[in-house]
Every structure is written in structure tokens, then in C-alpha cells.
Length: 134
Image (cartoon, rainbow, N blue to C red):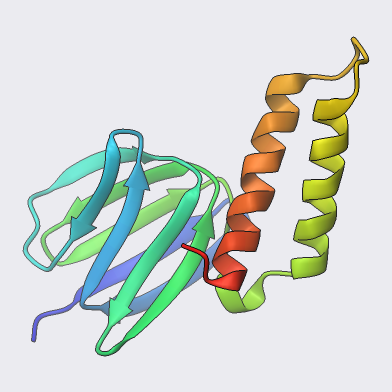
């Protein structure tokens, strides 16, 4: 069976590099499935899980935002931040979620609600990927 080479890179360096059978990613226009031989394309990513199917197993990577570049035999994901499910610090993610919720519930004028909402979405994404609630 044909495979795709997948590279997931953040400003801090590479996060994932492997051969997979299929990729499912969440883009600004919806979820896309990518198989070997897919037409070339570039799409913006939104916070979500990248599903990487390899034989009978599926791996997950939490991505906050970025871009996916698809070529027939290679997919490159340039992400603002990305974490493989097994590397997520769940206690840290839950604490970030709690802080974001507190900021959103506060009535202070100094709170940037858009930023707090984005922080909450990132934390929820990391928690969901870690717990497999995708």
C-alpha cells in the first residue's frame, strides 16, 4: 500500500515525521482527508486534532493553528504549536483551561476576551486529544 510522508513542524522545531496511510486535518473550510496521490494544495488549519492513520493504528497530534501543504507523496504541516497526544502535559492543559475560564467569567475591562477564548480553545483541544475525545 502507498504511504505519505508527514512532517509537522513548529517554530520550536519538528514534532512529527513519519510515513502514514491517511491524514485527517481540520481546516478553516472543514475537515479534509488526505491519501497518497492527493492533488497539491495549501490550506489554513484551525485548532484541532490531526489524525494520522498508519496500518491499523491512529495517532493524534493537537495543533493550534497553521497551514497544511499537500503534495502527492508528502504533507507538510507548519503549526503555531503542536503536541503528540502522548507528550501532552494534561495537568498543565487543565490548569490553562481553568485560567481561561476564569478570565472569561471575570467582568474586568482589562481582560482581552478574544485572547482568553483562544486560550480556552487551545486548552480544550489539548485535553480532548490527550483523552481521545475527538
